[in-house]
Image (cartoon, rainbow, N blue to C red; front, side, top):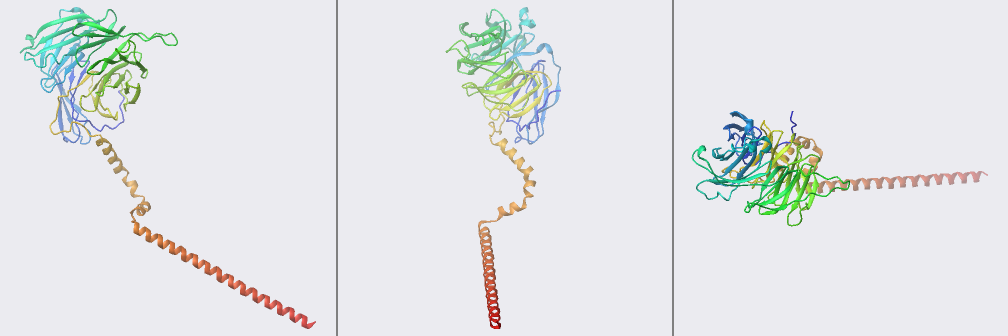
Length: 478
């Protein structure tokens, strides 16, 4: 049974996320805030196998999507290995690399297949030991092309990198492959991570037994190669095993962050040195996912035990962990390009949406299969909805609920409430009355004391007179 969190999910802003699972399904959950409608119906689109899931949100307070129906059958041979997406307001594109060696270019709006390429002739690529682990769909090459020419970068586990062009046609059988360039990025080991910078001029590769190396995509030459850290104080050497990597900034390929199987996060600067300029450990399980923030120095880390945290790479200090525990290994983390929201998914079959500022859970969806990748569709816009969520919206709602729940307890304190209701004039009058009463009580006490003293003096005088009279009578008798 998967572990569940007891945290309340306040909901999330309008957005669209696409998830890719181990059975080849592509799903698009659409979480919305409560202010839009009390009854909203959305659709999950399984683009490759024409799956459709209907999602309904009925709760007015929390926009948590729930899957209510689906159509179609999954296929394990079409497991999604790598994904890439072009974020544009017009003609966005989505590329998917599958386990059987097939690469598809889809429309993230309706799921129509625009182009496809298969590697039936390459038997080595179709083997399970040489799957596609890296995929990038270039955005600049087909920005203004009427012929719908797509340029793709692929990399397999054995290090076979290839840049090819695919021309989309009216029918799927009419898709043609244009020019292509193939080279090898490693002489041994297995490639596990591949990333292209924001300018689409450089790419990094790394994996098990393969140090991080950066290649110039224009000249197809290697410009930099990392160096393993030295041995520790005990003389133990950590083997090279990179699991994930990402660039810190879109316009700067010199700084990047890499995660290792030995639960280390390393920051590299190719303009400074070959070894990492900063290295720290995170928990005790391998790093499985890394994502950069739009500020250029914050990173998000996910490991094999379901832990997530944000770290400031300028100081190496952890900003905080995300509230809630994921039940399985985290396999993908992505930051929304506009909203302060990140999404995470993994082997616990949950898609979770988090607030980047408070690190609180906004929404969670159970999707039944192991989720391997997640992407945001930034072109998804709802008319009449606030795209940027208010920072004070969630805390005020929580405070309002707490005040409503605590109001009966406040009503019981009648004595304190009465004192707070009195105004300043009434308080002054009451204080004056108290002072006068104290003065009168003091005067009465002083009068009583004076009369008692006078009475005692008169009685003592009488006793003295009687005593003197008795003495005189005695003397006369003598």
